[in-house]
Image (cartoon, rainbow, N blue to C red; front, top):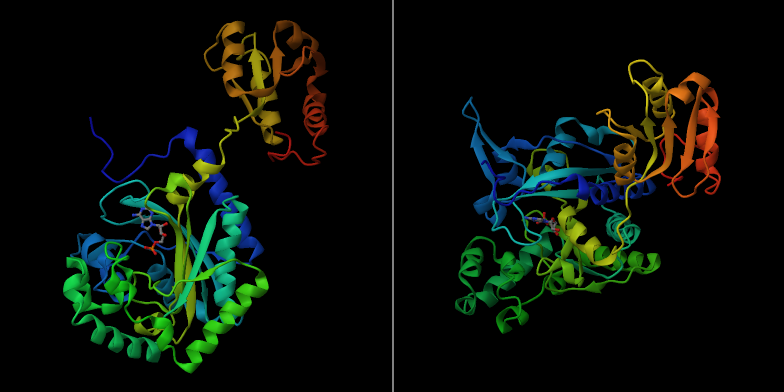
Length: 436
Ligand code: AMP
């Protein structure tokens, strides 16, 4: 039997409601913050990721899915979303929009050849957002607030927002010098990966998960102490804006984030919820003011974040204990000949009006149809046999009472709508969930 590839996952029908909740909430919150969706290809020229994410990052060095296409071009399955968005904004000249900054969000699968474990897969999903074309510190706060508001909307309240600043290029250069000087005599105390990173990109040593509690890393110089005056003003304003918004955050001087392109503000939100296990970071992001230029685009400062959707699902496991059983509006029980009577027509009319209706395809017995109906959890049984067909009526039986009413076929849709909206005050039943 052919099995799914290691590190990938089927999302089965009994799990899909949670995914829909995450996706719907994402779109609603994006709308509130006035972001538009962008969809970019799942594979891109490999060079895009080498030049943006960074040659020395673990993602590009060890984790990309690369393949040569039939024209001998090197392609890569996207390991993250920002690079594709940047490429698309440049290629489609979206930056000429008079209404800058662009506020974009994306959602979809990403691919990294990692060691699979709980909350870490080879195909996983990210929901990300980017604000492109503004240097304002308000934009940094806006993006952090967007991420926090999304978590609140999902009722994930047990969160820690950590922020830090790497500063502008000048600050980053000064800091790297200081870090190099400090690390040179101490690097032998750190792990093998740190020794490699130290040579390639010393900043990334701070990001090490293995040595994060070692004295060597604890005592290392911190980016925040090397900020230029401009970078300091920028970060102070971000903090003031977060205070104004009323978000709880901590300044984490060790936070650097793994990718090369970050400048100024970086942030992560994690949660102590048990279901997350070791992978407690729900979202990470930061400013990347030089990426557009380094990909031959215009000088466009930008900032973004990316949520790991599978981790959100793990977090939701901890807080949404009670399962909501999906419900349909009506189960149509047909006791006559489906090819002779009007049952298909009636069902279709109800569906065209937005009601969720299902029925039996197998000419089952009355008892079997009731059994099948109950598995679908309908609000009404609609019973239609030869008697009803002759009279031009349907017997409507609510599943929560013993009453049964005979309703004329031409009045059936309106009757059901009235019944369904009676207790909810919901005035439109175009398939909305108000009546559930
Ligand atoms: P990154 O692009 O590495 O900054 O990751 C952003 C977010 O994506 C992380 O905080 C995780 O929630 C999620 N993420 C990253 N890698 C994986 C993975 N291999 N499996 C599941 N989620 C991931």
